[in-house]
Image (cartoon, rainbow, N blue to C red; front, side, top):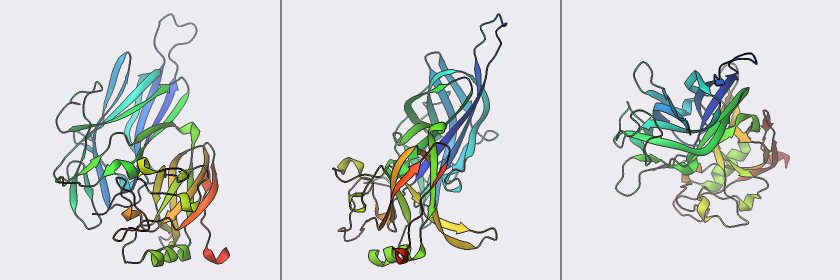
Length: 340
């Protein structure tokens, strides 16, 4: 079974307007216009579809529920169609009071293959059910239904007067689990999500030279490859870059915080002119990047290394000192071996 390494990013955009001026004698609360979209940055998959049901914001005053269905049908989003900085909208233009909030997103979960629900299609064209092992209510109607899964954001965020934009990233490289034991469905861990203020994030994009990709495939052997770029915080030497089994990493080794699929770069005529990658939402700071052609062998539940006989995993090339600043796109161009 091929492991699915992916990032799901959910963007929250809010445009807030004050209600009432200094001469207003009422105590009307300040309100904001709330919008929510979904985006993805996957490493290896054919189709990952989530059937969204509702979004709930809650605070000490209660909860606000948004039905995200399409004309009564579930809002199904194939995450692979919204990579990098692309988003699909869940909630748009909803007015809410300013304040501190937590958020829950509810999805329909299905342990059996069902194209009308949440599902995964692997590269061998097999359809699997997709579920999450969390449920319960954040104040949303029907949130405790047996077919409803809850994606809960522990981090509190502020809706303030002015323009507020957030992004919530699901790190599915460590949070999406393929069938284990007697299970024949995929599971999405509800803890694989972080919420960031978009004013504090940027992006990274770059390309991988063809000769670097070829050299990696030769080193890996075999005939099955999945090209991806791994993101590491601060400086991480190539020999210290590890896989996604984060709990097993011991210094000086460093675990990745995200991964991105390497995709074909097309010109305006649809012709392939190279191979590139993109991280859509990255907190401002300094990063290192590692490239691999065997991302399919990275199982986040075990430690994968070059010594694995059946499923070897390794990082073939690295890039250091990629600086991300707020609201900008940093370039992360890997270097051809012929120029080294």
